[in-house]
Image (tube, rainbow, N blue to C red; front, side, top):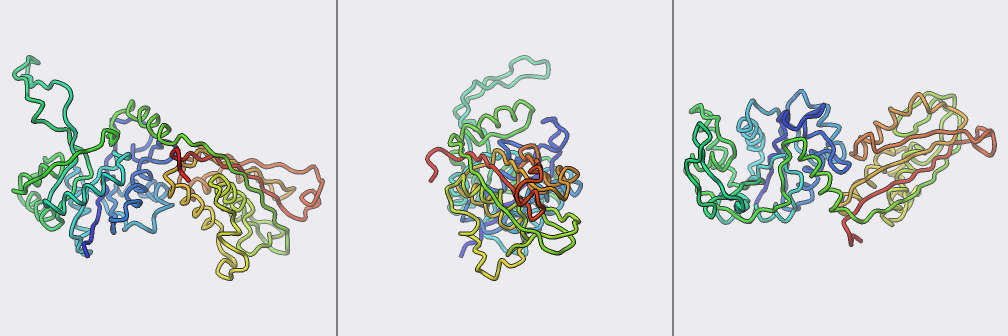
Length: 393
């Protein structure tokens, strides 16, 4: 059976894109560029191994951006000073797994489709080396050092090159090792290195939407593209209630909070995450938390509720959608939620893989009315807004 792997190059700084963090950790359509790229690769069933390559300084950012899919990835390895060094690091990490074909994909191309990935694999299987390209529509001129036109090139023989680029694994790794041994580090893509090493590189049709995010204005276009692809907007609501029992803490919104009592339930009784899980499932018309995690099943006894919420978020992504916003309201007399609000927002954002700016957490009392007012338990109300591709079931 053919083993197919992918190297995701995400070790750059992305300085030309601006922003306070490297561009791969900035959000596009409510999901980080890295998260979007990894999700697309994970949706491609032919890929068995995915090897991220990052800067070690970005480890915390990487873990946060990949939290929802981390268990499906190989451990990230450190990149190098150049893209070429980073690709080689990824290939070296993959060698013990003995892949037959490897795809090299830039994290800055988050809109590559699973169809393009399949085409890359098929092309490499036929030829040993293949890259997606687009025809050049503009007239292209070569200019001299003074800026005068030296030559008008024949655009019919020119192509714009994209990733993922696909290769037989062993020859590509050998080419990278040879280039390192000879001190060559100037190749701008793996196809150029493969050509230098004597490999014949085939081309196949790329995708116009497979754009590369490089400059600040690219993020504006990318945001527009991401939203345009997800025209089916849905809203779901979730409600949950848990009673108090003797104890020393409560778990709410993914946080353990010291308290004179605890909440009872089959799992960890996280009333906030339960409500959010039902809100997401409701937006998908996909049952409720009890249907997927029945309390009669002993495997969920004492389970951490982040598993339930992560499951619901993955159901959204499995349909090609995105979580646009989550809003949680907690109703209780105690404990005080305000001091923990931002930590809850951060925990929820990490669990579902979205930016914290898309998570709202509020709290209120019931003016000492009802079971929450009497201090008998806690209630939570949640809404979830998701965007799906039009026509999604």
